Length: 85
Ligand SMILES: [Zn+2]
Image 1: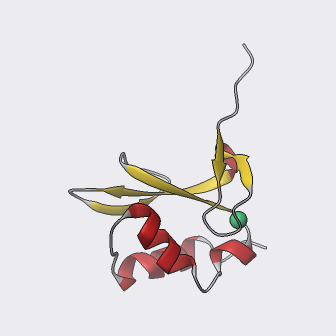
Image 2: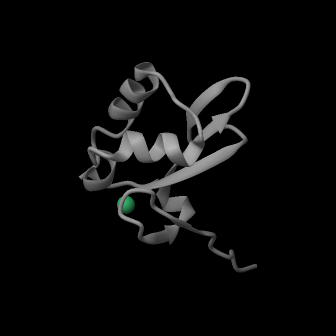
């Protein structure tokens, strides 16, 4: 069976990609914000240095997820995405 691709818009560059090739950031109401796991409101970012190092990304993410995450999450995010080109 052919797999239908599910398209999502990157919150940084606004381009549309197949979501399997993107980072998913999810805000779980009770437990916090996660990368590529969790159930809840999600935002997608393409796996490029450009988008993951966008100076406005943190603000965009917080707006998209309707939450304020702490610096701890952002530190994890920076480590998780450090090898992107
Ligand atoms: Zn992007």
